[in-house]
Every structure is written in C-alpha cells, then in structure tokens.
Amino acid sequence: MSLKYAILGLLDQQPHYGYEIKQKFQQMMGDLWPVSYGQLYPTLRKLAEKKLVTMKTVQGKKAVEKNVYSITSEGSNYFREWLNHANKKDQQSIKDEFSLSLFFLDRMEKEKLREIILKKAKEIEKRLKSYEELYESFGSATPVYKKALTRKMILQTAAEKQWLNEVVQHI
Image (cartoon, rainbow, N blue to C red; front, side):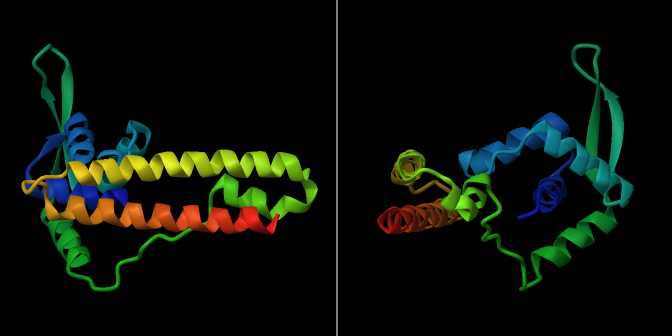
C-alpha cells in the first residue's frame, strides 16, 4: 500500500497540517502501519510536485508558521481513480533482512542459526498475540476496515509463524 493514497484520501476529506495527517493516519492504522515524518514529508513534497496537493503556509497558534496541505481537483480525481480501480497491488514480500539471511544458511553454525530462528519465532509470537488482543478489544463501534486489516495481519503473522516452525524442523 502506498502512503500517497492514504494522504490523498485524508486530504480528500479536508485540508490538514502535516502533523494532523500523521495523527489521523496513526488513528486509522495504529500499529498495523506506522509512518514516520521522514516518510510523510517527502511524500507530500512529491504530491505537490505532481500538482496533486497544494501547500499553504499559515500562522500557527504559537507564532510558528505551519503548512496546510489541500488536495487539488486533479489530486481528488487521481485518488478516486485509484480507489475505484480493481487491480490494486497487494504486498507479499520477502524483502526483509531476516529472509535475506536465509539465503546464507549454509554459512551459519547450526546452533547459532537455531538460536536466531527461535528468537525470531518469539518475536512473531509476541506480534501475533498483540494483533489478537487488539482484535479482541474491538467493539461494535470499531470501523470495519480496522477489523478487516487487523484480521489480515493476524492471518499473515500466523502463516509466518507456521513457516518459521517448518524452517526450524528442516535445520
């Protein structure tokens, strides 16, 4: 999922400061998809360069100038086109350091490898438990998207746990 679409979707509702965009995004996604200012502001700059958003500097409450971002009509059309497009990319990737290290299993001591994998398994178990607890805490007022995305994370993390158990068995 691309951050630019999340930003456009939030700005399609109303203009926001960069800080507000980050806060709204965190409220929406929580721990499922953390975003940093290092990702947010370069993305906003690229969207402005493509004329999908505009930036207006205004006086803040504490005599500090703030940038307010608004979606342009072109940006709104771009967002709606993406929203209504059926073939959106989904991300299933092995582009992480842990997966990369598995290419070099034969260069690791078996005991060290087992230790690393068991540590990773504990991390995955902790993450799975966190997602499950989050899902269990949802009430009837929880938005459907949040329930659906959290459930997706539970299933993906459970699959990762199962895969890691299989790797351990083959060592």
